[in-house]
Image (cartoon, rainbow, N blue to C red):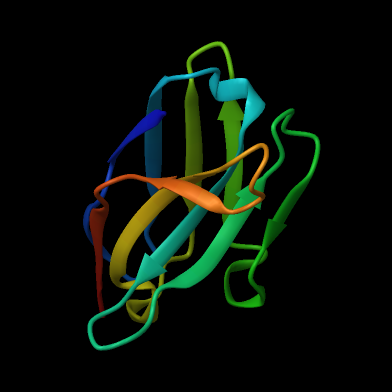
Length: 119
């Protein structure tokens, strides 16, 4: 079992930056690939970015490439999402998730943190 707690959300003007953090507790954090997802009002949850267990491999959806960076610190059991050049369309609740080693699915989710970008 892995418990995930996101933080760092808030209100920011367009063009600004935020860094989200996701602190993990429970089973060995470094065993899990991690992802960030977001859900805007009235829309389905969508993939934002992911990082391998070692941090050597990352991926991101096209709409955030060049603006968002995912990283992790296994010594601190934390994964980050650095968000730069924010746009109003980035407004959403952001969730971090851990991908199960055996299932290959995102089995564990945090409660989410709200990011609001004003124009």
